[in-house]
Amino acid sequence: MIDLYTAATPNGHKASIMLEELGVPYTVHHVNLALGQQKTPEYLKINPNGRIPTIVDRDNGDFAVFESGAILIYLAEKYGRFLPADVKGRSEAIQWLMFQMGGIGPMQGQANVFFRYWHEKYQPAIDRYQNETRRLYMVLEKRLEDRDYLCGEYGIADIANFTWVNIHSWSGVSIDGLPNLQAWRDRIRARPAVQRGLAVPDDRVEAKVMVETAQYILQR
Image (cartoon, rainbow, N blue to C red; front, top):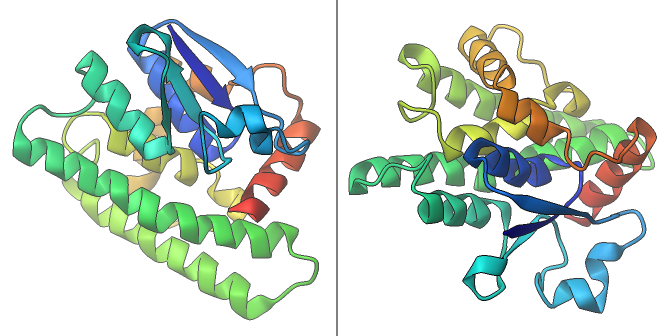
C-alpha cells in the first residue's frame, strides 16, 4: 500500500497520475498548502523540504520518497513499468524527465508567480519567464515531430512534462502554432488514468485549488 501526500498542483498530479496508471492501491492524504500543513513537524519527518508530493511505501518498511521526479522513478522501478530497462532507453527517459524538473517546472512556476500572483505587474519578469517557458515548449515540439511520446512509448517523461503543459494557459503561455505538442497533450489527456489522476485530491473545489496553487508556487 502506498500513502500519497499531495495537493492539486502539477507536481502533485505527477504522482497521482502515475499511481493511477499503475493501478496499485494507494491512500490519498490531502496536504492543505494554504494552511501550511506541509510545514508541520509530522510532515517534515517524511519530507524534510516541506513540499508536495511525498509517498510512503508501507510495503517497503514505510519508506518515504519526496521530489516528484524521484517518486516517478521509484514507482517505475518498483513496478517495472513506464521506464525502459535498457541503459540507453532509461537514460533517454530520465533526460526528458530532468528537462522538466530543471527547466519547464522552474520557468513556468515563475511565470505563474509574476503573471498571476505578484502584488504588482512587473512586465520584464513576466516576459522573461513566459518566453523561456515557450522556448522549452518548442523543444518539446521538435522532439515530438516524428513520435507520439517523448521516448517512443508513453512513460514517466511524458507524465512529468504533461502536468505542466496541461496548465499552460494559467501561466499565460500559448501553445498555438505547436501542433505536435497539442496533439501529444490531447493524447495524454484522453487516457482514463490521467483523467483520474488529475482529479486527486477529489475533495477539492475550484476556489480551494486556486488558493493552494498560489500558495504552492509562491513557496517554490
